[in-house]
Amino acid sequence: MPTATVAILMGSASDLELMQPAADVLGELGISVEVRVMSAHRTPERVAEFVKTASREGTKVFICGAGAAAHLAGAVSAHTVLPVIGVPLARTPLQGVDALYATVQMPPGMPVATVAVDGAQNAGLLAASILGVADPAILDKLRKRREDNVAKVLKADEEVKKKASRP
Ligand code: RP5
Image 1 (tube, rainbow, N blue to C red):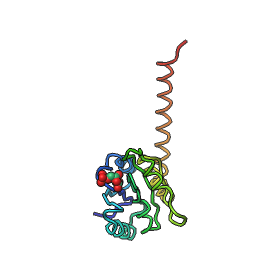
Image 2: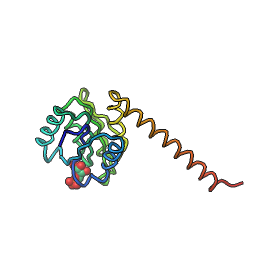
Image 3: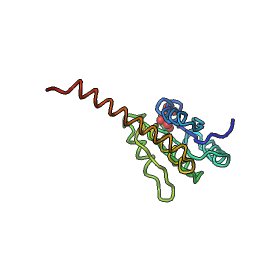
Image 4: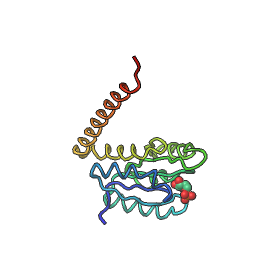
């Protein structure tokens, strides 16, 4: 299987439902994705090997989702200078605050772009924006999505105005 342009990693298979929107939006944009389960704590060597190999063989962006003590994004960033996007996941009674702090507060020199808790779709869109710097066709697709979203909001406004407004 050729190396995918974007690698989506998660700490556990139980994270897939929350991370699926990242793969879906990249697929809609025609960007290849490889989705894998790798734990920063349980399979650290596997994470290192995968990231080094993928970085060497054509992957351009890494998206890393994890809950709890969510160190996956930082662990990936340790093995590549390619962009790493962290997605904190609400998987414990702390509802993602634990994962947010573990993902966002990286030390100087080791950046991870962190999106919102459970923000997998935005992680996919951010990865597409990064790729779009070198591929204007991707930026065109992203602009079209924004235009479509405007139309959806305008339509919703009309519906709510009609339904809920009172004379
Ligand atoms: C994290 O711990 C995983 O990303 C997951 O969000 C959480 C729970 O992992 P499992 O107990 O489901 O393996 O490492």
